Image (cartoon, rainbow, N blue to C red; front, side, top):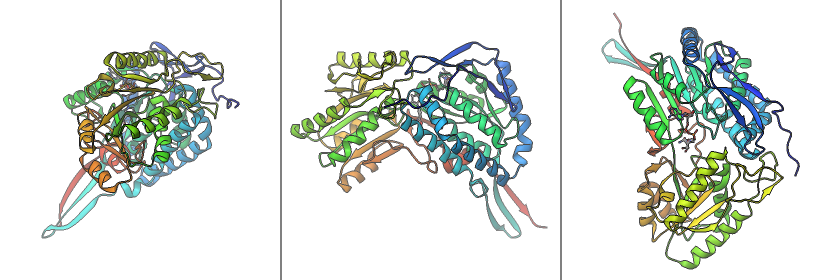
Length: 495
Ligand code: NAD
């Protein structure tokens, strides 16, 4: 099938967006490479401390007027942003494919969920209402006003460069705060395109700022007294560090982190419906999804069931078409870069050294189209994996399915709950009692019953437990509104 037209035709310069102006940074330069074609598509600069300080100062200066802008007026700007994003829907999706490697359908899904978060935040006039009690004592009333707080830092990972900023940003600005976004330096083009449209939508200068870079930018934000809170999405070691630093400096924080998700297969599952779902869960986004299936746990002692099930899984996985995501027939794109591919290959070796059996080897995939194989991997299946192996416990973040077995549902839940992570866990069964038992006992923020990717809708919180999440409130929906506001309590006595 033909390749869709590429929206990026020349090497783009990704600038910072500070106080309503696009400014070229003075920092070190970094190239942005399309992982499928290995061609350069952009350049980004690692911002200096002065540049970060100026973005935070711009946000601080804009805050007083922005918080006085009525929620209805703020929501109208968000409605306009939604319209502009709909107009550019396909272009934005293709950019994600070019910069991250995901297939065009995966990218369209990302764009859609991003827009849904804006749609939810458009409801701010009612979402931000407080509450009131008359006569808490005779002639005295008390009420709560959810009030904006100041400037928030939003730090995002490489795997969803368009969507993850939108888990926080619409809610932060809708509630009257100002923001400084620090996108992943690996794919800053999508956040830049999003930000171009915020300008057109009518956000006043200083409300929405973007500063590019990596660790130094994050550290400068964490040290800055004018940043009142941080939302972070990324790996567990970074998230843990950010959570600690926010505690030390008194900033509120949401840190959504890494994962190692189990998918339980009960012998009574609907096999025909389950296996295609598993393909998306384990190999969609080339396994680079915090909600991806990583460990497949087959429950029950029937070797016959195990064999038949795994034969079908391996057969379907081996037929997944790997190539450039702008080819609509492609089902799996490359991983983000060569280093990530090497890390995944290293994990496959670790698994084999630990005693796992290679059922399907994706290290040299057959590619559609004549693209360099630098960042491509095919679906890989490791069998005979046991719960204590590193490949069962550590986040590989690639298209590798580790297959484990459990005697019964009790042992299966014990194995899942012994994981350090608690991002997402699913079960496939047609037995309501087992599903209930699983949902009740599993230690996991997102729980799926006959669902392979438990991606909460924009009006539900994006949850997580154990090493997958540090904080109290979550991004998206009502919890994001709570996070970005302080409850101001007022008591008035009527003389
Ligand atoms: P990462 O932790 O390397 O980077 C995340 C962000 O932090 C980036 O903006 C990066 O520039 C910055 N950063 C990196 N190292 C830093 C350091 N030492 N100090 C300060 N800042 C630093 O994560 P990644 O590789 O970009 O993203 C993949 C990870 O994100 C995976 O672990 C995945 O599971 C996780 N993730 C989690 C969720 C969730 O909701 N739980 C969603 C998406 C991705």
